[in-house]
Image (cartoon, rainbow, N blue to C red; front, top):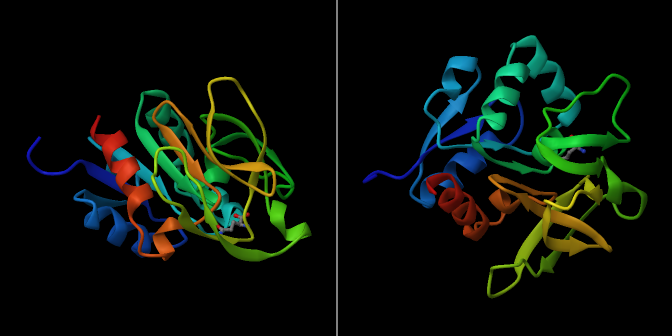
Length: 194
Ligand code: GLN
């Protein structure tokens, strides 16, 4: 492949533009995804931060949820940030009544988990595979409460996993797209390319 991988950004709600900018800085070609056909031929997909309850409603209204499930089951690489991490979780705690996820990651995620302690905070986080800490911004973020054996924990905060990987799925509770440090997007672009 001479051009970078083609990475979609789920564009129903949330901080879509920031992810597009970070992905393109890492050499990916990007495509906004709002319809099932826009999933065709993607090497990877980013599920941005935003509001998971709104995204869930829109995904179902746009008939995107089942095609997304199928694409992930078929091996599409995906990276979910914050609300995107919630969407990728197989199990959800503290969702609103009727809230569904797309699933794929064998994790139980607690929504707005840090809200009980601090609503939003920033901090330097060690991430497995990166040689210096990442400045992580958490905004009403979830954390991983429980995970299966196939899930690798890449970073922790407040004693809980906040970045995980399982096969071609990557998720972080924080927002690397907001800080101008593209190392996490680069990890994902490499994953999508592989
Ligand atoms: N609390 C939000 C939710 O439940 C996630 C926040 C975020 O993406 N920054 O979807």
